[in-house]
Length: 405
Image 1 (spheres, rainbow, N blue to C red):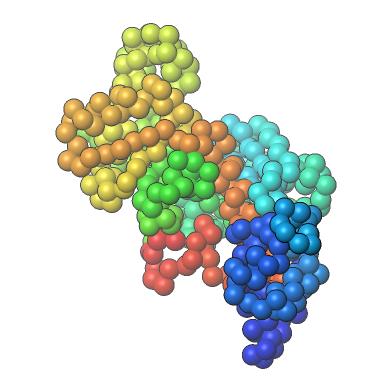
Image 2: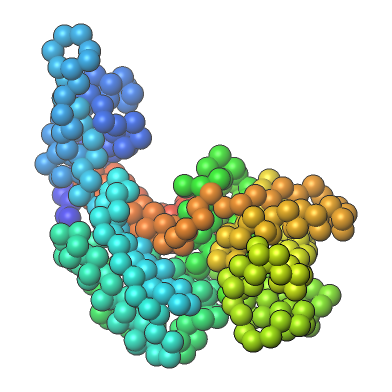
């Protein structure tokens, strides 16, 4: 969508006014012209002019009439759902999932496929095919999607494109970004999967009103999505939250303290034969299997150790237990709390189950994609937006390297 940026003070004022009208409709709509006038403090003429421009630019649309008020029925205005489309993708260890959402957050289409295990090119091809399938189901073209956000089990640089360390991606993620960018005609941002789960927790889950919290994503590995002051903290180069490598008495430095591999080792140590998955072990534990319960307890103890270590550094208000293994909160939470109390954690720690138990990474990716697509569309429509002053997580950029984002 193009924009005719108006020169001079008068053009700048018109752009600012249009953005003010757009923002209030976005925040409080659908709403009528009198309510928009009161909320913005602008004149009736200015609001009418801005509405005409925003409708012409196709970011605002009429939403029927309000017949409840006294006097003539008033036309209601809302954000046009089709003005911005986002694509969220979750590249998991077993599955790749994708979803297209519109400007108001409605999921228009969703699809998934098995994750290729060997070649980055095959992973990129699967992502592109899913994106095309979702676009077709949503009744649009891939090129009409304004932003794609892809969640990966990897450390992602602050630029949103560099994979620094990958745990489950084919070939360690080498060449993945380049292959996707070559085939997918959509602006692309990568983000760590646990960070996206934390964004979903903040937007849709248990932490909507919590400024400082840590989401512990326990699955194939262990990671933490750290939110401080309401903003995702990504660290100096994107590596914040790699708590799976925190020192633990039972492991050597630099090795993972928790995750599917560690749980499998604990199962062998408990005398469980075969190679049951964490899911299978938790099913056995629910059935009362003593050996499986011992593995669950060992897992809970390590989660408690990690939470206590993090709390000593940042003391968040809440810890949230998420991820594939973390979804077994019915078995884990009581034991985690027991170990925190028994081992006398020096600070009080509150840990709760995730409020987004399913598709947290995908929901976080879709929300972030929608956010960026909207910002670009709004800026183009008004000439007063600032689509480039937010970081890949949709937060205002800090003024210093390593700022929270």
